[in-house]
Length: 591
Image 1 (cartoon, rainbow, N blue to C red):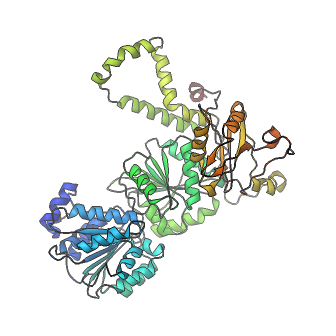
Image 2: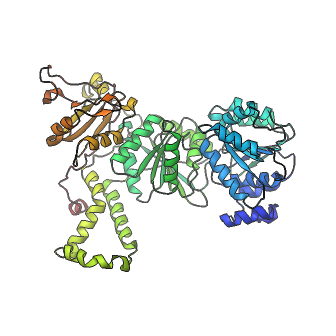
Image 3: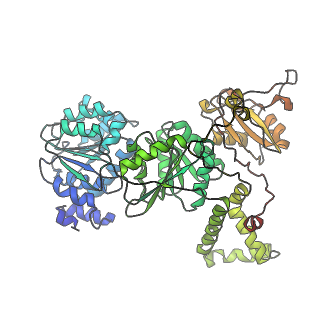
């Protein structure tokens, strides 16, 4: 394997990347860097995310820039703001010892005036999203007549997002005599079309195989009924205590709903989708990169540019419509020499997609069997014990407090103390799985259940539900269209009802919501929230079933139907917080 010096990288750049931690080139860097350091060398490089492709094009592009000239000499296009900022950060790190070299990011969703000022001060390299760059070109601020290198990073994703015409317009506005560098994870017909129209005698450099997923990734799928997808997700997450994962969903609504369920069930999770403000998205991604969030539930578009080397798993909460998106998803794990796992939770109608993906990426999926509750609880118990063993104890810091601690806990035996520690750390899993219903794997070609045994269609569409024993089901006149999800409901109740009120199952619909509270707290919650408001809108909380006696007694008793149509939440396995189980952890493992 060659060194960066042997590849022709300058001393200033080598000094910077050595401080970053780059010791030897990756395969894509070794293949691409020497070629791009030449002139008139157009390239299509097919490589997965995380293989070091930013440095593969970034180092030669930076080396060919003349810092003494203040006009723009290179343009890098990226599909999203997040990836744009990440590329700029990397290029600035590489060029920290190159005097006078300026790299500027231009992207939508931020002040265009500040970007105009930055460009007017001079920028040899512009990293941009297509839409904002075209805007600046039309204003005469982004002047590209002297550009020598154009890079299209994640070109396949830009085309998937509908930037084809924008790319055409940008490439038409730069000199014909230039290097065009096209980096992509997959080779589609659209990529071939761009290469035919804008690249000259290009070289195709393939690291791995065309349209292939990352080499270090295992592909597993679990086949379940649609109604069991969320319980199956919980089992997968619970079976891997050290999991650090992105959970991909198809829509923004599904993303928020899955994240809300996980948060309510006690998981360290956050949602990332296009309905969030840019500030919220930036904060969410920062927390995830810093490992302050364990599970990131995201749409494909929102997660573009979120590169994290330590991901243990990618979980597909249903497969995407095209193979390219699956390749991008799975390529986010198994990076930097690590092993990774791509898990897909699918139902019968998605089995065909699995076969298509297998043929395209040239890898077989393993058909997984969901772990049983006892396996999960055993895994979690050993995880708790391992963590207790690894806790670092600072004797000096805790010494002043130990006499009082010993006095307070003196009445407990060693066995009692161990039981309490384990119950505290392990109780949530035991409580859920002690009586968790079985998840039955569907069989292909399964016959439909007899019509007489199925719930009436109208009842299924209305999503009628009976409260858990000991709980009362309440109606709230705010729903998803008001941006009200589980977290907002919990915060609203906490704001107006003092003291600890347990909230059980929450059902979300577009126009309203339903939540359960202990029977003895129902009247208190309704009374305390009688004058509640969200903005200028009055909050209405009432019995979901008026036959329970809530609301105006002069009105005829009737059942309140769901206003928003089919119930959004169908997790039959949801256990309300605070509900006690008869089984204890010792009996569970003895069974």
